[in-house]
Length: 531
Length: 77
Image (cartoon, rainbow over all chains, first blue to last red; front, side, top):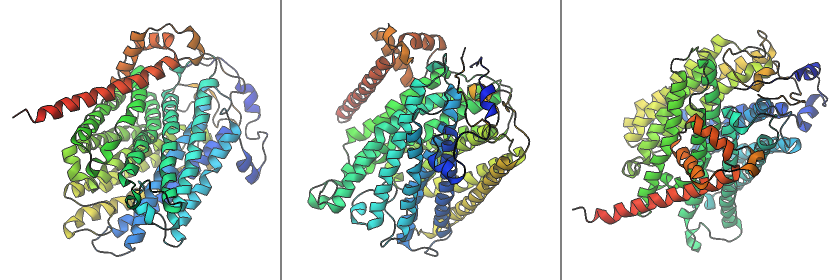
């Protein structure tokens, strides 16, 4: 798509590996370099992925058989809550901010992100927030145990772990908003000459829309949890029925944040997958314009459908019908994307390296998650399925097979650029197939459990649910252990391996492939000219 | 959807051009040719305002549709 006519890296390459920065720990604490910060985001999110994953495995272990075996019910509730919060705010969101930090400046021909120090602060706010969430398990009363949705009245009644979760969310919100301001400013102001917005790779476009969504909705979440905080400690009654407040109000505010949040998590993944599919099909993306339009439309429409998460709390039938129709409509631009990816592959010269496998896996499984979402969009069905394992299966098909698989696709795709080495392709493919098989083993059966009526967030269940739960638990351990292969592959790739050329993928397009691999510490100090 | 920020001052797209672009974005479809002409003529400000208005029209449209359906439920039999 873009042709850079520049010899800019003649200068940069001379500084490869020894930029002007402090060494050791101080390099990472004080860095304003987008690549350093991007790497820290990615490592942080992977660490959180393992922490949240261990919580998930404890949950699945408890659910291996009916009755209570391993953990107390109170602790089980804390695990489900922290698993959700950590995976959404600690793993997936930072992972894509990490991708953005690394790749946006490279893709648009900028020397760095617009606000280097703010970028540093955005990252360094994350570890304290993660510490607050994890250590809240050890305070009197334990961690927040109301589910990641933090519904009152439970949140008003719980111990100081709840306050720690609220504070953590505030900090994570600050971090996300600052990251988004940085991304928007970088895209609007630091593009190389000739890199018009319509020439940007789709990953940049998807992040632009996502960044606006983050700025729009994170303050809403902050408001909701602050009102919870004042209800808890300062005598207000926003959500406390005893004082004349309305617990359902919280649900409306939360989901006004929560539904766009779903798209915040998935839209950057759309960008990654679009680029990967185009590269390994050796064709330009089919319907680039449509994709940009669809992403922008989803961004706007995501604000109009929030109450489909709460059909059963009581609302007029008119409102139920409104949210049902609006939700079904939002599936149209999403369906257009699936069509575009498929059409990109149509008659392409396909090859199936690991990033492509994860991208195709993403299309398959995200479509399953999208369709089960449409099932749940129907009020009459949702009234039956609300708070069952069907919902758990649905959103894991969008969050894990959607966001996580696209993050894996992106990681394998850009790993040669980051490390300068090729990863072990065979191991990558094994990682994909194990993840794909075990993911489905874990979550597909949960559809059946949900339809049969098994409620979520309960540590015990009726005897007839045992078989599917055991399959699910075995799948979960398989999936979890498969991720260690990914870690091993990355570490060996960082340490060595075949040298990666500047453009390791034959069909890849874009400015990031014009810089050497590994990308020098400083790139695009002189901006390229894009034709 | 444009939107070269630098081009904002030279914008010449009319109301219907912007409305059309937003309509097609809601379906997620756009001819490349039309997209390229959008990108030439529509400014970022126009597209953001039109997008918000489009979103409001969508919401009001669905609300009206739903009300018509609910009112007619009783009269169907």
